[in-house]
Amino acid sequence: MQNNNSLKKVLNPAYLIRALLFLIACYIIFGVVTHFSWWLLIEKADIKITSLDPQYWPEYIIVFVLFFLPLLYLFCSFVAKKFLPIHFPKLVLYMGCTFFGAMWFEIILDTLFVKFMGEPGWLYKVWPIHQGYTSGVGMFMWPLYGFFVYCMNSAIETNPRLVNINNGAAKTYLYALDAMALEILTNIFSILLYSTYLFYYLPDDLLHFTTIQIFIPYLSACGLGAALSLFLERLKKNHFIIGLSFYLAGVVSLFWLA
Image (cartoon, rainbow, N blue to C red; front, side):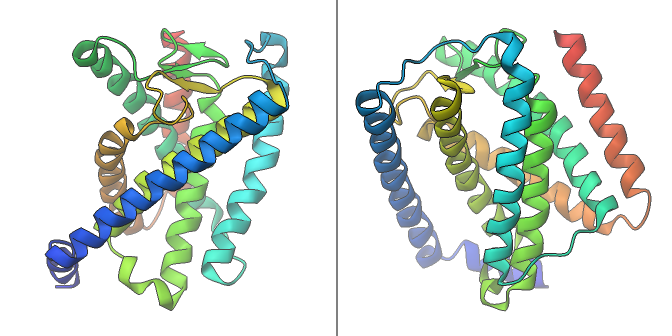
């Protein structure tokens, strides 16, 4: 019954208009942030975009994780208005499943970009694998995103003020926008510290940090992710084993593709 009520609310014209206006507002903000970052980092700081030497890839990954792990946790805790408890087995479940699903999704999606658009949507610049459609960094980046999804789900469920977005449709929409925001932040981090993009989007509407063209595919991916989250929440045991199995399957897939 709750799911039906949530669906009716989402399909309400007023709700859809607000969602569209929110998307437009986010796109404007993304544009301001990316253009300001480009002006500050490239034009004023005179950072030259280069390829990161493979010998620095391990350092990049370590610094990446050390920077984003506490940042994502503190952000989600801020949303929840409290420090979030972590249930480790369920966290591993989210991290492993996210890595496996996201890694294959980006390969399939970039392949579709080539087929229908004539060029990839993006190319990885650090530890590129499979023509740059994915990256070895994904072994750490995507589990970290799974950590974010786990914490954000917990934050939304914890904060009573967020009850209106505690449904699959709203989470799908927000996570698609979150993904674009995190991509911008990731590339700012990469350019500032290592003078390179982690991933370079070929469309230039947001200066290659991300692109609005990825929103609809992300909406589809996040919809699948939201459905998966509902399934994961129903699992009562073997969280650690299932999550670890998906993670190892993802690692094997990456090295097979390499």
